[in-house]
Amino acid sequence: MTPRHSAPRRPRAVRHARRLRRHPVGHVVALATVAALSFGATGAATAYIRLENNIETHDVTALLGEDRPVRTEPVDPTDPNAGRALNILLMGSDVRDGANAAIGGDVEGMRSDTTIVLHISADRQRVDLVSIPRDSHVDVPECPRSDGTASSPRSTRFNEAFSLGSQSGNVADAAACTIRTVESLTGVFIDGWFLVDFAGFVNMVDALGGIPMCIPNDMRSPKAGLELAAGQQTLDGTTALAFARARTGTGVGDGSDTNRLGRQQQLLAATANEVLSKNLLTDSTKLYLFLNAATQSLTADPETGNLSSLAGLAFSLREVPSGNITFMTVPFRSWPQDPNQVEWTDEADTIWANMAADVPLVAPVATPPVEPTQPGTTDPAAPVDPTATAPATTPVTPVEPPKPGVDPFTPDDLQSVC
Image (cartoon, rainbow, N blue to C red; front, side):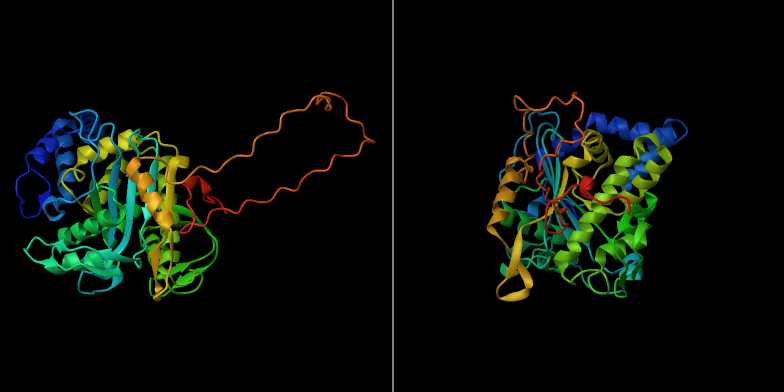
């Protein structure tokens, strides 16, 4: 059995060859984990197949054209990802049908709610997540669709790329147009993609047992269904989604999408802390519940969206310290022609160039050097003279904590306890 697929595309020998070269470590980890919660090989295989078939996959390669950024070739020809950085586009869809309608209200059409470029360094020691404001004023290129139609290029809001692609009614076309737009704007090759909807996000948070967060003030947003008191809270799936979606109301900021991006990044960072604090590989029941929730909610490309690849990638990232996971928003400023939209600054070019080159996106903060002890200074072991005057000290200027949505930050920067 194989994952659900969209209509078949033109055959590509190289892609098919890659799919046969499953990651051996990831495959073993995934099967061993499932076996731990099953009885015998038959039970393990059944659970593995069930998880594998939860993921809906679409091959959109034919829709992305031939003028794509250069992709770095793998060092090891037997492993398509060995020794190579990966760029994965994460998309949150605001599609209001089925279970999603019960959460966000029944609305026709497909919309993009969140877009993040996830970069994983080639040495698997660094993870960068760059949010793209949906109100960014950008040039969206022509986007072919699977039904033979195509959208025309235009200057518009970034999130319209998803809507333009989706006019065929195929969510894969929406993803393809967003990928084409990101690649044309950044020069970064997108190796894979994931799409998560409202219901899937709720299920994944609940499968983790909720996300502990320090809420700085009371928050109320009737439109998003958010009622949250200040203090230490554990957000269940429904509350976490409302926290991420809220734009208007009391205590949720200035109502802008860029302000909301900061809260979304805080939520993801808190989620990363929760996942890292719980070694899921040692708790097979929780791992299976999380995998079942996660895979049911995912739409992805065939190479990224298989259980072996997911398990292998997670295994390779197991030792990444939380301080090496950086969240940031692409640098932006207000668009002069419309204060409700933003445009990227020149600093954005540097961010994307660094990502393409697999180097840190931002320079590390310099630590002031420690002054060496000068000759003739007091011996620290000598007795203290109670009549001596204390030397003058220079007041230390407090360092402002990074502001999510504006400044780069890591999960270590979060105030975990109120």
